[in-house]
Image (cartoon, rainbow, N blue to C red; front, side, top):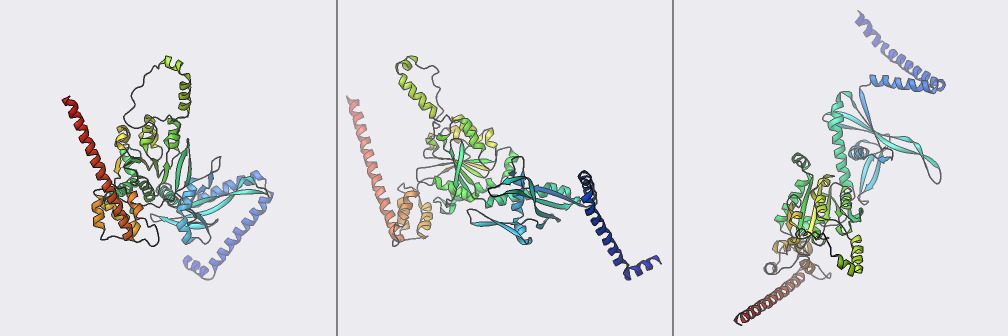
Length: 493
């Protein structure tokens, strides 16, 4: 009977009346609270606000987390805020109605983010959550030449159901930060750094070299590419085996074989920055460590022509005499003063300091870094400097042979085959010519110069080099015979 009465009341509009009364009550409460706020003391209002918010939070099944744009006393921009902004860029582009855009990568591409007071949804492992963008005024004021304005800073609010607390605070936020940093890394403008004493300066890195344009054996090239990509994806492996996430490359070979070009190709393949370290400009080992600390992850630290850098080549220095010839110092005081003045300005970086830089305790500051040394004379380097574990992979870049020539012909002339190729390959196996020398002959010098003219110019250069090599060999042979004859004469006497 009661059920029938309730059904009749709902059908007759009782439910509508009930909701109307509820709405009136809520409106009355809000109106009364607005009036009371004007007359209640500030401390009492704050007390009521605090406990009313606690009451509503107790009733609400949702949790909110705020991520402020600026943190700390120095108001540095939060890395978490930047990572979230990058992570939400793709979702903002498809969901938000008001967007913000900014140029990156030397004004070549746009990054989209949601405007203030917009909200987008996300889903992780079947759980739905919401991100909102807001702004708040700062307590401090920024004074300009025209007026005093209140600075504003943004913040993101993440809202999710309280039953998903462990999932969101653990795996989800780690996922957001990792993805956001990766997006920022891909969108950044890469830089080429060089050291001026103990600090770095930089320019935009825009070298066009790739492994496709590198003149070397395709098999060796692919081996290097595979090694680099494997290294860049093996963070967990390096952590598991207890090693710093870094790898050393030693590039050696005659001048003009493409060592610097390979470094640029490595940076373009992995999207890394380059730190070109000039050892002669570093004052001492402490300054060297400071430079290392200031390098970023996902970078290549390069020391070119290390056989010419300071006194770090050959075997370790023999022990010097502890006592000096005091009489000589007295006799030549001017020479002694000149030596002291020269010593003040010279770099005091030692081989021990450089070895600690490569794989000592300080080398573990930061991760995902390549150390690349180049040299024209590998035999001059101290074995301790280039052993495995420091320079893990040795890459020889030698003279141009048939496979490297095919790459150059394709790059410079746009051809895969020609009737002169067989003759050129034969000469390249007999003559030592660097890829840089070969490329110079393949470079068109005028608009009308065709491929055959370039190849004939290269053949002429190869034949000339072959004749010069044969003449030098004959001269060396004659000198050897003369030396043997002189020795025989002296023996008879």
